[in-house]
Length: 140
Image (tube, one colour):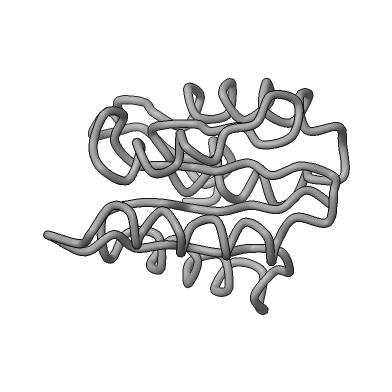
C-alpha cells in the first residue's frame, strides 16, 4: 500500500492528519506528518523526514505532500523525491489527502495523476446561494 506523508509548516501536517482520523473514524495506516517549526535546522528536519519515510514505505511507493512550493518544508520534501518511488506534490489540501488515502492501492504514478486532478477540482468559488446538494433545496 502506498505511504502518504505531509511535510509542512507547523501545525498544518498534524492538523490534516487529525482531519483524516475525523473523516475515517480511525487513523489510517502508513500515514505520517512532519511539521517544520520556525528556525528549525533543515538538516535535522530532513533526517526526521527520511526516518518517517522509511517507516511508511513498504516498497509500493510514497506520496509526499507539502504546503507551499519553494519554502523550507518543500525543499525538505524534494530531497525525498525518488523517480518512480517517491512523488512530491506541492499545494496540499484535505480533499487531495483523503483521495490519496482512499485510492492508494493503485500504482503510485496513477495515484499522483488522480491527486493533481482532485486538488484542482477541490478549489472553487462558492456563490452565496449555491447549494452543495441540489436535493437539499427540494427538501425545504
